[in-house]
Length: 95
Image (cartoon, rainbow, N blue to C red; front, side):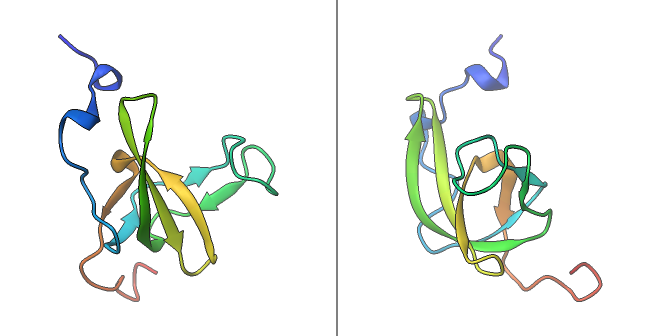
C-alpha cells in the first residue's frame, strides 16, 4: 500500500493546464521559498483565485503549478491538492 506522498504524480498528466482559472482550497503559507515574506506568512487565503502560469516538477514526483493570484499580483507554487478548478467567479457571499 502506497501512502499519498509516495505516489508519483508525474506518471499521469497534470491536473491543471496553462491559463486555467483555479481557486485555493486552503490557506497557503510561506515555507521559506517565497522571497520577501517571513516564513509562515500567509501568501494565499482559502478561496483566492488565480491562473496557472507554468507547470514544473518537484523531486521527480510532484507537479508544481505556478499560479498567478491576481488579487495579490504574485505567483505562488502550489500542489494539485491545494487547488481546484474555478469555473465561475466566487459568489459574493463566499468572497
